[in-house]
Length: 159
Length: 298
Image (tube, rainbow over all chains, first blue to last red; front, side):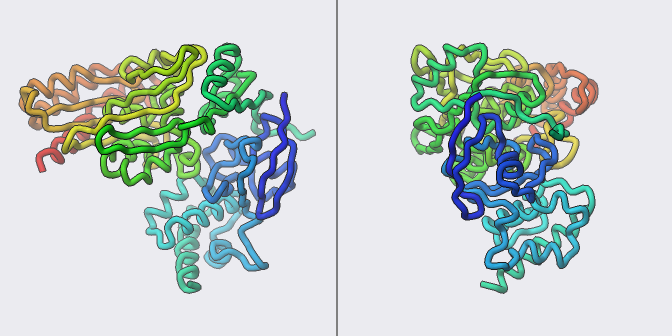
C-alpha cells in the first residue's frame, strides 16, 4: 500500500503528516493527532458522530480519505472555542441540557456551527433538516433544537 | 492491538492521475482491480463490507472540467462529475430551470453526506434506488464519457443494465452530465417513500415530469420513472403513452398509475415487500401525476 505526505491545517495548526492510502480523515484525527473529540460511530456516513468542517463545510470524516485533505482546512470540535471562549453553540447546549451521554455532541456541535454559518436564523424545520445526519439516542433532540435556537439568539445579540 | 468494532477500509493504493487521457489509460490497464471514485459515499461502504476489493482507487475529482456547473440559456445545463449535491441544490439556475434536480438531490441522505455525494456517482453506482437518476432521465440528461478511444456522449435511456451494472467499458470515466433546456412551463415532482420522512433510502421513488404538448392527442406529455421497483430505474413508457393518447382526468390518471404498478417488478427486501411496493407505486404515481397535472392547469 502506498503512503502519501500531506499538509493539512487542523484547528488552525498546519501539520505535515504521512498517511496510508486507506486511512480515513477520522482515523487520522483520532489515531495520529489524538483529537479524540471526533467520534467513530457507524463508519458509514449515517450517524454523524465524526462530523468535522472541511474547508468550512461539514463532512462525515469517516467518508473522507486523509490523503484527500492535502491542502485542506479542517475544524474539529476541539477547534470550535477560541480565546478560551466557548462557541455559542457549545454554551447553549450546556445551558439547555442538550447533552446526555455526549457521544453525538461533537458532531451535533459541528453541524450546528455549519448551519448557523450559512443560516444565522434557522426555523425549527431547518434545524431538523440540518441535523438529519446526526443521530442522538439520548435526548430526543428537543433540547438540542432549543440549544441551536438559543445560540442563534446569542449570536445575533453579540452582533 | 484493539480490534476495531467496525471494520475499517481494506488496503488499496490511492492514485491521482493528472489528465483525462492518463486516467482512462490507467483504468483500462488495471480494469480488473481499479475503480474511479468521486465522493466515495457508496464505494467506501462496499469496500468496507468486502463486496468489492479494488487494488487502486483512482481519484477523478480534480480533473479538468469536473468541477463546473454551467447554465447557458440557449443550450442548457452542464454539471461536472465532481459537483456535489449541495452545490446543485443551491444553484440559482438549477432552482429556476430544473427544480426537479434540486428536489431529487435534497431527498438524498444528510447535509454532510451531500457535501460529498455527486449526481454522476449516483448514476454510475447504478443502484435501482438511486434518487437522482429519475430526474436525470426525465430531464433528458446526456452523459459525457471519456474513454480509451476519446470522448463520446451517451443517453441515460439504455445506460443501466442491472443493479450496479452500466454500459461503461473499461477505461471509461463519466466527466459530466448535460441537460437540454427543459420543456417550457413544465411541472415536476419526486415522491419518495422511505422508512422515515428524511434521509432514508427509498422503498419506492416516483419521478413525474409533465408539460403541455399540443402535438400529443391529450395535449399533455408526461414522463414517469420509478426507483427501487425493478433491477434498473424503470421508465414506464406504457403509462406515458397512455396519458398522451387519452384525455387527462382523475380517472385516466388512476389508470396510468395502475399501469405503472403492473409494469413494476419489485423484490422483497429489508425495506419493504414486493406486494407493498406495487401498491405504493400505484398510490404514489397517482399522487405525483395529480400534483403535476394540477400545476400544469394553474
